[in-house]
Length: 140
Length: 140
Length: 140
Image 1 (spheres, rainbow over the protein chains, first blue to last red):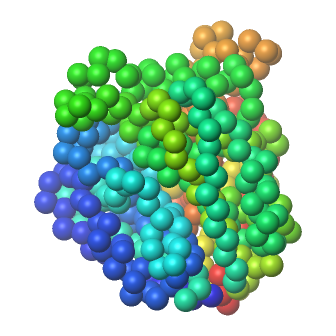
Image 2: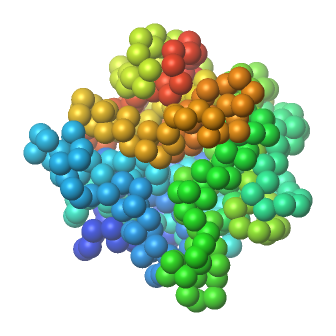
Image 3: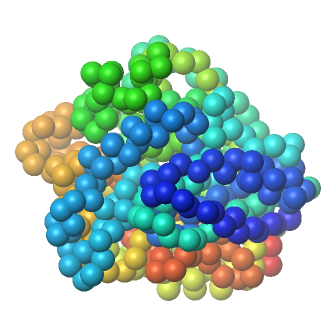
């Protein structure tokens, strides 16, 4: 069994932005030389997510409104967490909806993605600078 | 380390149907010969999910109503995504709640499921014909 | 490839309690001797979850209110599942939001957690006594 680890540092320019990291993850898999195995791709910031969906600008806006409905940012005083000086309780909750990250299969050196599926990084609370962890285990 | 890959093509007869695929996944594990490892079971259609819950007809109806509350299908014009000719933005959002799929442990050739837990495929947007990917890695 | 399996039996004293199991999971990784691999940590009770977030008492209260908004317990008759003598349909739905469990990377014998991230067990329906499954695969 081989293993591979990489930190992808993402340049977040806008809160709630969907950043397509599929090319970087594919590069990691190639660099690892692993042909068959599992690929873990996780956001290492507690208010950020890695998720899979199609790359369509309208859908990104739908996510933003939808997440705001499910866990509104305002008023910030509605959350106990924010009474200690934070203002990001909503981002913690939104992350549970989207998840911390994903695990994908790799077969014959390729990521197993469905039609239209792309991998996105999304920071749910402002502009934190953190990395996405790519960990791959499998056989070369 | 051994690896195994199978496509389970699911015959969806009804939208929002819960299709119990536990027997097929167990068959995959047996066919793989792998005793200890991880089993990835993912819906390869961007509007479908694989999830774990009990097999109870009432609960399936509860899911349907609940998902409709969280991300209503109508009016379809409420979603930006739908303004380009699609009508399935809600299905994309529902998939984030349920997840794309699951990863299970395998021990001594058996799937590690809790009491009552079964594996379901659910298509959230009509009758797309796509497959569930089963990827298993581990030792024989 | 090596594999390791452990059942962590959790003493739940209060419904909806967040129980920090990070030390026990770290102990499992050490005990396994595995340096590089994947660590699956799953709640084996169909109404419980394992999730990652910060350890902050205010946030726990926010989760409780938020989950109750998303899938209210009362009135229990609103759910078809409950018409057969159960009263926990809401707990099944809440579990889908939080997830059954997580998969983490292990590198050089350490769990890959971000700043502030801790691992929690939460039982969403009363005081069921069940275990968390820790399954680790990788190389020593």
